[in-house]
Image 1 (cartoon, each protein chain N blue to C red):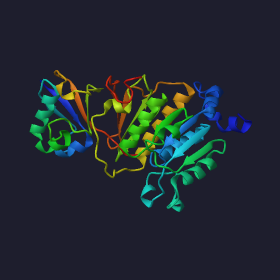
Image 2: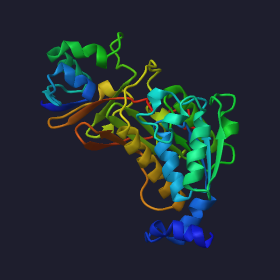
Image 3: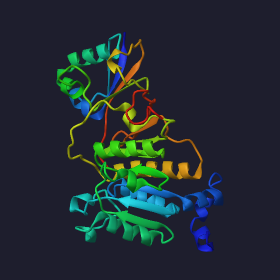
Length: 242
Length: 90
């Protein structure tokens, strides 16, 4: 790290569990973020600010006026721009030491494995279940962690998957769920995205206890966090073989 | 046997906002059947037409996932069931 980087990160290097060693680990890390929307905004902002060295941000969408209540990496002047371009500009200005790589493509069965190749982990900041399951499957196949987060209205949830060791997203699968436009207020993905980013930082630095085999449910209306224990499913289509 | 059922936010519209309901039953399935007897409008939100749980529903028994075969799980006096909904938004 340069002297400027050490100064930039000095307040987190002061954290006993982190230190310069932890900061170096963040700098060497390559993180794949699926989605540059409500969850992807706080995840990418806080990982960039923390000095995670390489972020690959994937989103096929353009910024819409209705996104701006929650997708805080995009601003009014960005309406109509590709989300990944808008995010790249802000994140690079926030921390020029971080490599922000962007792909404006739809994540599909055909490209998912290739897109995540060479990355240490996947952050699930998607807005639909089929792509979440596809990314969960890709993470299991590649043996890299998967950081799940989802929101609706004032509520959200987060879970960290270590393939072969902990329950994965598919372990709880019962069947397809109809897609629908979901209501949401910006503070909810802010809370959940920050929990995901916290998990990523802890994993990369090798510190703390992860949300593994634990689903954390957040109810913002009643300001309650509930922790549910989950377990691996021996018949899971994605991780049973691991 | 009294079992406490903790309802997801979206289900509280059927209980006048009440978060927890006490029901009787020897299994999770019996408890949920007795719950929808009390609040029939809730049935289609919890159960699919074939009588199985709706795909979007998740059941936790004493804060532990009851998946799979949730409805057959035995319960005892004082147990707590959480009925929650899968989330997809981001």
